[in-house]
Image (spheres, rainbow, N blue to C red):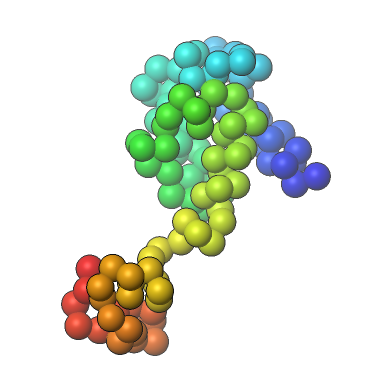
Length: 108
């Protein structure tokens, strides 16, 4: 199963980078200091090509390895991709798009 392979890979990455952290903990976040949190975000961003930021480092997202897997999966979904199309229109940016998907007329 994909989740099992992802979980195994995440455990492998984190156990090498954070050997003193008990990855089996029921509340992994409490085992981490700020450097550990930053290390996790950096490793997962690089490994899975996702953008993880400080706001992703919540106790809920880092509670267990399973929670970390769910966070990574959620970041890989299309709903976490850059804003385009209908979202820009809802933000009042109109619908004049260039071929690259960006709006014409300077909407940010």
